[in-house]
View 1 (cartoon, rainbow, N blue to C red):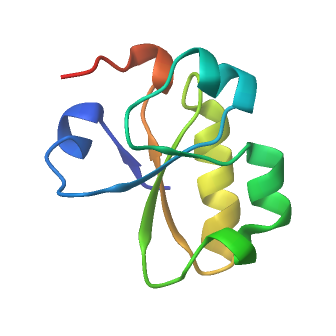
View 2: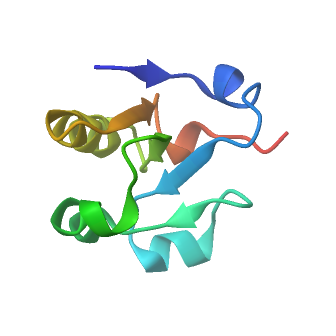
Length: 93
């Protein structure tokens, strides 16, 4: 399973980051310019939100759920990468 650190993620030009936390968690604190799709919604409707030609970077609170969801999406042919240690470890540059 692919993972990425924040340090490496911040070096990517215009990464497609999806915050899979709940909308309430997202509203309280989030990373600028990041799309919020709750994990359950993404798992059920991934074909609605994702394109197999793109790479997606998934972020949750601790990195555990994003890792599981990335593995799930990989089974269906999507390039999804989990952000290590999740949002709690993120610091805005």
